[in-house]
Amino acid sequence: MGDRKITGILFMLSASTCFVTMSTLVKAMGDSLPLAELMFLRSLLAIPFLLAALVKRGKPLIARAWNILLLRTFFGTVAMFCFYYALTHMPLADCVFLGRTQPLLLALAAPFIVGERAPKEAWVAIFCGLAGSLIIMRPGLAWSGAAWVALLAAATAAIAHLLVRRLRRTDDPGVIVFNFTALLAIASGLLCSQSFQVPTERQWGLIAGISLLASSGQYLLTMAYGYDKAPAIAASSYASVVLSVIYGYFFWGEVPAPSTWIGGVCIVSGGIWLVYCRLKN
Image 1 (cartoon, rainbow, N blue to C red):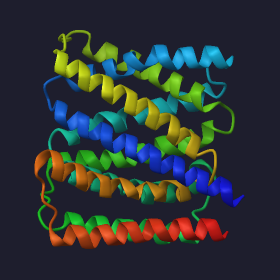
Image 2 (cartoon, rainbow, N blue to C red):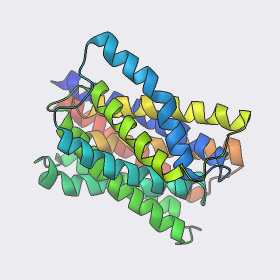
Image 3 (cartoon, helix red, strand yellow):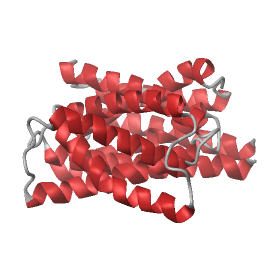
Image 4 (tube, one colour):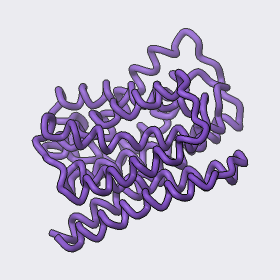
């Protein structure tokens, strides 16, 4: 049982790495393409590979719990749109830090959506991570419209992740990711159909990277929620804030303040505590 818990945490850590790296590419893209078009192309590029993988494994193409899948797609699409918007209107680290309120929101909502209460060690990790995020954000984050959009992204993503946990009870991870990606392509394609612009070579390269990392992250995230309770898995995603600080420094010259390092220690300590407790139990 302990091996399953650690496997779930490792899947979430890998998913977080994919998502933060993807966020870096989205920020590099900036507002050179409409968000709806970026979401459409990111999904469209992934569909053939996801479809081929399902056909090769002999899996069904449509999820059994299609009603839950539709809800997951709605909340996931809103979360993605809000997060992409926030990424292009505020520093990378600040956006990712605000997104780390998601595990707390998830832990609060989990009893109502999936009937799971957060284990005590997950709450310790969650509050350590939130405290670290607040310490990091406090020096200079102006509560702009983008900041509120980032918080909305965290809230809708928390609901989407819980619905993924529900879907894992009935459907294969590959089926879930394929269906979500296909529905996202349809929705975003309709939104950008009237204002489509042909990407440049550089933009195509960034879109390809975003598509690969997003699909990989979605698959790893879906796998993670099949191994342990949702709040415990979500708490391990705090590792992404450390990576966002590193990316922000190397690509945009964002020099972390002393408070950033203090907050980072809180976040990493919470993650280490979580892993230790899940191993012990």
